[in-house]
Image (cartoon, rainbow, N blue to C red):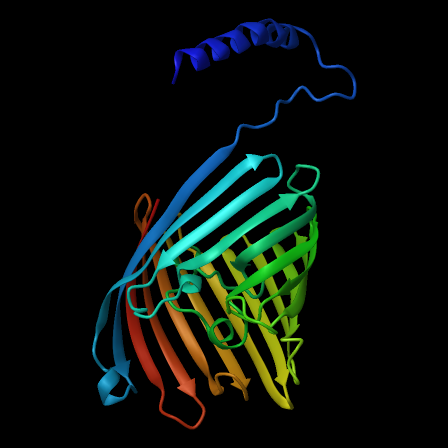
Amino acid sequence: MTRAVRSALLGVALVALPSVAAAQGAPANVGESAATPPEPTLKVSGFVDSSILVPLTGFAEGARGVSLGLDQLEIDLEATPARGLTLRADVNWFPSSTLASFDDLVEQAFVEVVFGGGEHGVFLKAGKTNAPIGIEAADAPDMLTYSHGLLFSLAAPTNLSGFFAGWRGETVTAMAWLSNDWDTASTPANASAGGRVEVGFGDGHVGVSGTFGPMAADVSQVMVDLDAVVELGSLRLLGNANWGQLDGLGSLGASVMAHYAVSSAHGVTGRFDWIDREFGTVYEGTAATGAWLFSIVDNLAGVVEVRADLPTGADAQVAGAAELIGTF
């Protein structure tokens, strides 16, 4: 820092000190807020998760080997440079993805403003964000199981890129968006539309979401998704129903999940999925999953899961998995 800059800063401080002292000694006028604008903040967080996956029965000969190693590294940056303004970037790396594109590396990157500067009110978001659809979280630290269910994997988008606008209230949130097609980077003629309405009550909510597009296609895909969460003390109940259609082909599925917190360090989850999907990734069948979640030390958790996939007309596949998740 140069001598001229230091002198200028000292002069500003000397001028400002009497004003600050006077402001502290005088009460705020009626209709004026005594609160000062918050200082800009930058939060850095993330996680590393590693796992071992053991096929138990029903797998083809070439897929019977044990898989283990690093699953994902993620670093999240969240800045609030002004009241009501948030910038967020989630950068992740999957070692198993040998041909990862830039869009794969950037899970989220958006700017969001809540007009009026509070937590509630009219908001506008632009960029790439986790799709506000369904009951399952996208990232390991927030998941209640090791694996994702059939609806999350086959019948709904994981991320959307575009513009999102709406109203966020204490109990009701409503939004609409114009985005790229599901889980795609920006390409010509793939704009899609969607929206969500969520109503909260006590320790739960009910939400309905929908997407339509790509709108420039000769035949657009339609999806409607209903989700609900209810918390009853240590028990959390989650439900999800999903319907879709494309060019006369249908998709219908449902998922129910229950999580019970045995203690502050242990919990158990059960999930049952069913789907009959005739387009995209065609699949008909069910899946049953049981998981034990536990805390080892602060910022280090574990998951042990057993899952059985039962495709219609084919052999059942059963696999076990164990995962460690470190957060910072």
